[in-house]
Length: 83
Image (tube, rainbow, N blue to C red; front, top):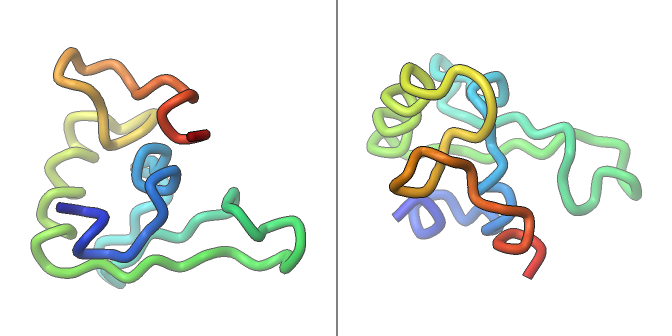
């Protein structure tokens, strides 16, 4: 759902944290991303209203670490977002 709604890369969705989420602007601001070394710029991912709602709920539940997690509540292992 989030991949389709945002156009973000899978690794971005699996590693986005509450501190990357800016609800008033409805964006994720990512310092660490695929082209960060080449561009030196942050990546901004624009969020639809349903994704903002989802991220608000997830940020309350997981104020530290990745927002999107497995059913067990543990973050996805790096192998999931390096593939």
